[in-house]
Image 1 (spheres, rainbow, N blue to C red):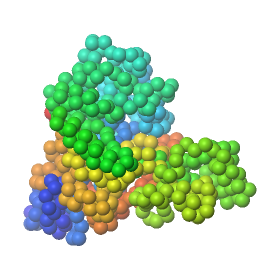
Image 2 (cartoon, rainbow, N blue to C red):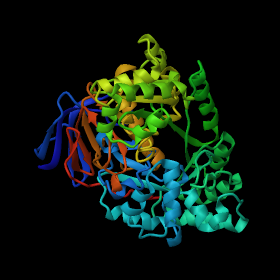
Image 3 (cartoon, helix red, strand yellow):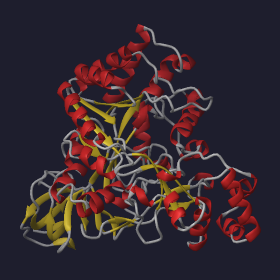
Image 4 (cartoon, rainbow, N blue to C red):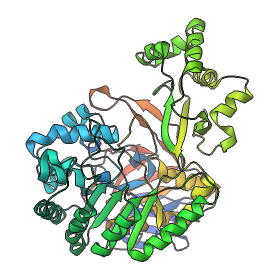
Length: 546
């Protein structure tokens, strides 16, 4: 018989954690129909000899809620094997939304997630009020990847309480109204509910976002609506007591963000804490895959305040390069840098190098300050020299979170945490972590050997798919939806990040392409070949199925 697609002779890494096996895979009508030895030809044949065939990757933490409006290809995650992305993280969503509150929700997303408000307002249709209507609008955009969405606490609280949502506690009636709205949102397709208790996440006026200090009884009331519907609850910045209360109420899946410090033994200690927490329910943590927090360079953010540096900020890259190559201007830049009180320690800053792929794994002894000392320079001089030598491409990564790869590796050994937290679509001019699946393959599997290929792929596929409640994706088996990657495990890597101005209004963002991906398939359609989009947009809105 003829098949739509046959992938021939690949190493089938099925997503369950089972050892890879050589074989073929057939796809028909958007689903996997055969695995192993496939008879018959495919209308399209993909030669996977010497390559791995995996399920598509599932990204549990994106903020592509707005970007999907003007970038249905959902870059950069689509360049890194992701076929399903979760929206609605951190409690900030665009629904429910009364017509008069559109600008408020857009402004809140801007201050919390560094997504330009103008891009949000002009890039989305804003033709919905409830969360189901938002999902309908996303569906009409025909995204290239599958998306699932959570309804956010901030929007729900403001919808019910108005201005009082920011600083006041809800009444019993208002808590019931919120729970009812969350229930309706899940019934219309949201896969769950997200909340945010991280005080540094602010409104434009400087106050913490709605729900940050809500009485935990409010979350318990909402959990009573989520649990019977088998929905997911996400809590960012919540302490363990709040997480326990949510888990014990829903009797279902709880997702939260976590991490480890640089201190020796902190990774194992945090893993032990997760094991104790998991005794209280189905709780899953996610964390960044490497040190992250802020990225700067001549092409983007500048690390010094001062009159000459402020003038530099107003120039494009060509103008900045010309300025730093002028001896008089350069001397002023160095002098202002030496006089400035530092915003962050340069001992936590690392040069990403000028190779095709960035160096995210430099040892702590190779920080920017040490690099400058070795060259007999001030770190500002090193920054300017490397920027000059690379024609402005040089980028520097501040490791604010997960500073120690050794400790992070000890944390990743836990069964209760998944590598993730790329924050794609958010902090777009500050960080670029959306290539995290490629870093798992290139570093944690290939270089460090922390995971076997089978286990690493499981943590990219069936593991997070289970957290989302997806039963038809995440493994290579007949009857599953055909979200598939064909890749070279020996070559997969992230390319150097770069700054582009492709958001509405020309707003800047970092992007990052990949190496080593031969083919990505979404719902049976070939969406990328050799890391480039084909134009196919076969993604689906994955609505909650109960």
